[in-house]
Image 1 (tube, rainbow, N blue to C red):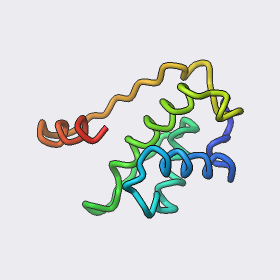
Image 2 (tube, rainbow, N blue to C red):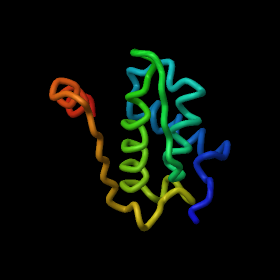
Image 3 (cartoon, rainbow, N blue to C red):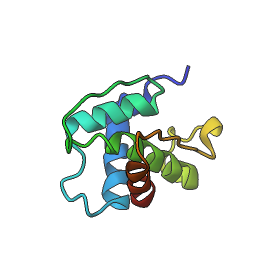
Length: 108
């Protein structure tokens, strides 16, 4: 078992730091609930999230991909978070429409 390293305070802080560095246009950063759910996802937990349009669900698939790519690219910067099994992370996002799919690809 990989454990729950992302759900620790250090893991949550690492997620927030990567987002602040890689997505500076998100000046306010992630919401607390987003950090919690993203940590669950990074720790391999299954998640079903239902929120209103515009509440930030897209961050729940985009940020884990971004975090894993950053950690894989710079493992020495993130000791304890690099996972040999995730050295070349791949994300699969399923969307209900071509338009939404195009937006997701553009934003990632």
